[in-house]
Length: 214
Ligand SMILES: Cc1cc2nc3c(=O)[nH]c(=O)nc-3n(C[C@H](O)[C@H](O)[C@H](O)COP(=O)(O)O)c2cc1C
Image 1 (cartoon, rainbow, N blue to C red):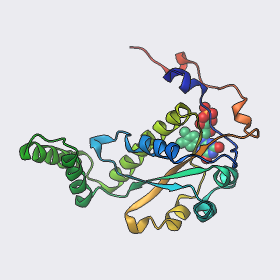
Image 2 (image 1 turned 120 degrees about the vertical axis):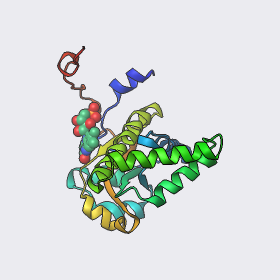
Image 3 (image 1 turned 60 degrees about the vertical axis):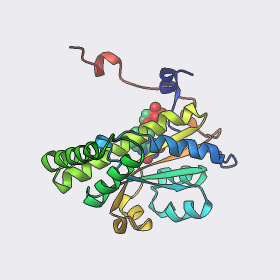
Image 4 (image 1 turned 90 degrees about the vertical axis):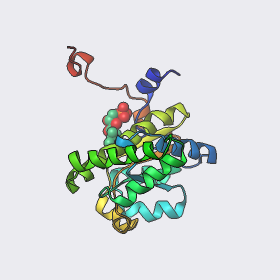
């Protein structure tokens, strides 16, 4: 299926078939979509909790709003997307070290220029803690988009989920101590016959309402 067909045929899954697990390869493919998502300045200010065991599902269940409880209980895979609270030196040091390992720099000068450029941008444009927090949260939605389009490309069904108590989730996963906070989730698996959304036509505003051509 080409990418525009995937985009128009995908849908939010409302009920999962709990008897169909994912293979390790399928889970790896989903995680690879998250890892390869782009982020501003390649900051990757995110962390993903992967829940694919009964113990994990039970652990996060208290944070899930009622409308999503069955989905999270029955999907073979759930992912909690968290972002860093602030962009600190430790994060920037780790980032430039990773880029070096990955062969991004011709020499020490190129490394230094890249590092200084990123820090300069952050100091000029993104120095306030509130800006940084919101900025990093926005990046998570790019990773979510990769996952939502990638899942059907892998023959899987997925649900984006904001319907959970982020404060409760932060406490369950002890995120504050890790300098993180949860923002959004996704479940992935195979839908069941009870998935009413699979049969419904997609509804979107027409292009002439949402596009302005200059
Ligand atoms: C960020 C985000 C959060 C969402 N949260 C939920 C949710 O908590 N529970 C749910 O059933 N659907 C959730 N949805 C699904 C939307 O309702 C759905 O994407 C929208 O109605 C369009 O339908 P479609 O995805 O089937 O094309 C969410 C979607 C997005 C993008």
